[in-house]
Figure 1 (cartoon, one colour):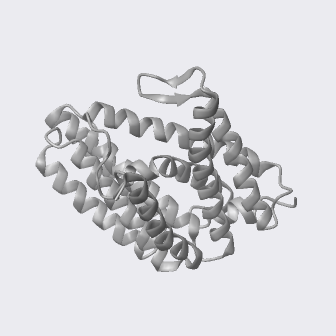
Figure 2 (cartoon, helix red, strand yellow):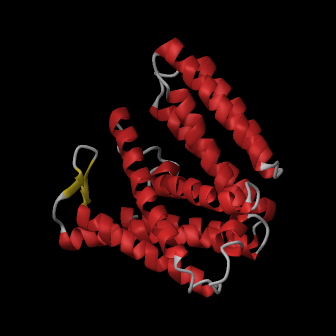
Length: 275
């Protein structure tokens, strides 16, 4: 089986699992968010194997498993978020003292906070579905069209020391595509006339590309091509969600400021005022 065929089959299987869970929401989607977080921590620890003391590795698993349980049980966001932030700071300090690395704390934050954000964005209503589809559209369109635009136009490199294949033309093309795709989702949910949502989509698109570059820099420092081999033909989970985790946190923050920490989707689609 060719690598392209394997990539296509893996993508079909992933979409067949993710889209129904996204559509129906509830505990099934919260479990999905928790699993993504746990997979991200696994890959982070693997990429830093030998650099993080074993006791901090085990402690990271204990913390994130507790946070994952809280996410699945829909514990209030502030409680879970504060727990994760305090643990991340503590593990970062411990790592710096024990092994001169902040990797344990960064890994906990990188895996846990986006999982919480994604779960809370979905919530249990139509606004939650709109918010998550808005996020998916902005991030996925950015990722796909950045690749094709960059290949078609080329030009100056975006960050040659981190990811030599990325170009400014691709970044701009991806951002434009992400805004258009996210606006399409907003329009489908009756919010196409709200001028603020394209600005939110642009911010999500830009931060998702920064998330992609950050994960590339982590892999480069670790000396690996893929974050793992969990997804046949695609590499690891982080390779597929590097932009999504960054975009999810930003979109959650936008929504939480307007709608509250447990109702971010309402802040994005329900509390923005008249169109």
